[in-house]
Image (tube, rainbow, N blue to C red; front, side, top):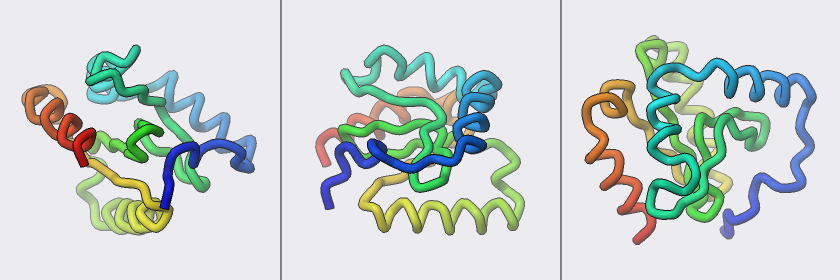
Length: 125
């Protein structure tokens, strides 16, 4: 399935748009750090969007050219209810042909080389 342009022409609930804007304004420290790594095509020339709505879900970061969703997971993602939600969302996005990468807050703060290498490997995929 061709994923390029998957976010265009979506019908989006106005509450979701407002929530996405709110999340962009109130990014976590780890999300801000990741955003600094990738904004303005700093990461291998890839364009990323923040808090992108896809099929009613809001993903932390999205790269259209790779069909790639990037999630930055803090401790809130460790509870069983949140893990179940994340798994269901990942499955729904995967059915659209999207890839999902998850990085922990610790990865973002302490292991940028790993993140850079992982994103670079997606270019070659």
